[in-house]
Length: 199
Picture 1: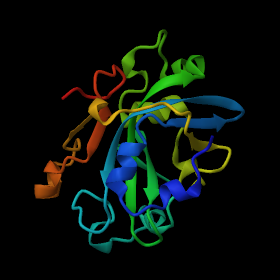
Picture 2: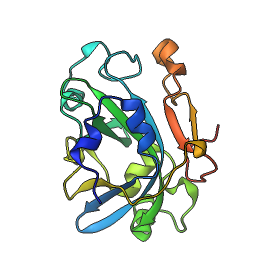
Picture 3: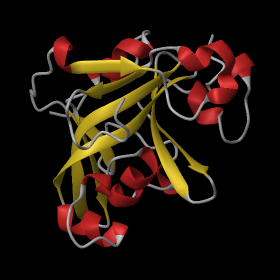
Picture 4: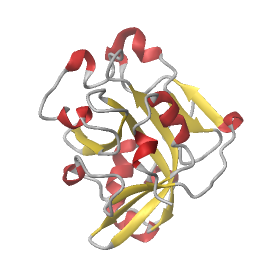
């Protein structure tokens, strides 16, 4: 079952980031279905988070989609190479987002291997937000995409995730964010080999 709009528009981005673990992310690019179970996320809060692109109400061509109502995709380029896939949450103008860092691949693994130029599925196939986007065919064309549509979407397949199975820690690669860099807003499934970085 696709996650409804109401899942994304809730006010607590940290809660949403945790509850995305065990949900499934899919893309249908040129008729090819790829996807898998989300095993790692990070929360970003537009209001009081120095790590968030929209901190201090920054509105740029890149961040404008963050001010939309939850349930759309925010895709941006890093290092001139990788596209990162984020889910906008909360009400309009709140600028909250969840970065999906890793999935456990389930559907379309052969296509993912082709996109990643890999011969066999190793954990780094989709372990990390940049390589995950490559495997799923995610790029800037999905900026602003409706997450209840038919190109990129999320599903609840009833996978039970116990709170004891969720690890928390600081987000990765945000040393510029001062004390906010230490917020425990990264969530991952303990012992899952597809998580991008063990802590």
